[in-house]
Image (cartoon, rainbow, N blue to C red; front, top):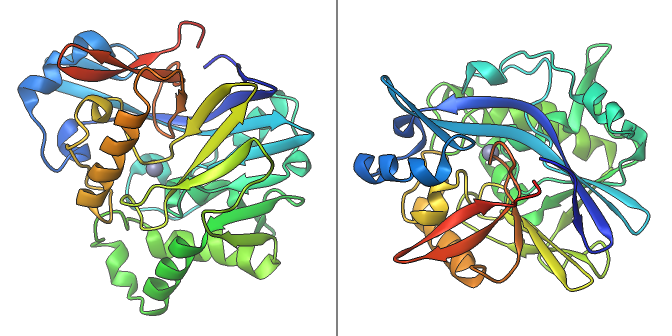
Length: 305
Ligand SMILES: [Zn+2]
């Protein structure tokens, strides 16, 4: 994704890794025929086809927002040296995420806020890094913004934990116990966090919206500046296919039905209204808009992305 301007703010994407997943791995139920039909709209950046079948591209990236003398990081991907069982590309990695941040001209000390749209393993990983055998906050001057609802819900699950669940996770809970221990508890212990409700805002331009379903406290970040608007949608929509088929649900949502209701409402409210969508797992140019076609809605990448 090329850098984008939303009014007085800039948005850049910091990629950790791009994975290929099959539709069967991603979706609980989907229509294979329809899926193929979307290739003409969503290939090559979001899905590809081969004799083995359809592959869905899933990008794992953060967004860096700069403006009003602040630098904000949205979602912190998978992280390095973390014990993870959900996907091989998550487990015990050693990727140059911080070097790539530096190559954007940003040091870890420059980040003012880390906003986790929710507290799953692939959105909290770089909250911490392993230094001399301990997990410490990666961004020493940042305030980490966690949804109060998600924190309370996950804290309760953790306190009633059985680590066996990481081998046999409930939907949306893969690697939950490990990531809670190495990426959330160290932040809580550092005191560098705020548990927020949905009246939270950083300034007049940056606020959050409650978008429950994927997790009960999931939030989207809303950026408004000089008449322009963007949404950082986290895992409200995992793949551009879900813009056209919001009722297809993934294996990753704690409440799939609520996830679908939230997604459909958001899509209907933001079709052809000029809002720019920055989703947590959309690959390639990533930034785009929702537009109407006869009979369906489609995610369309920005020409300059
Ligand atoms: Zn995710």
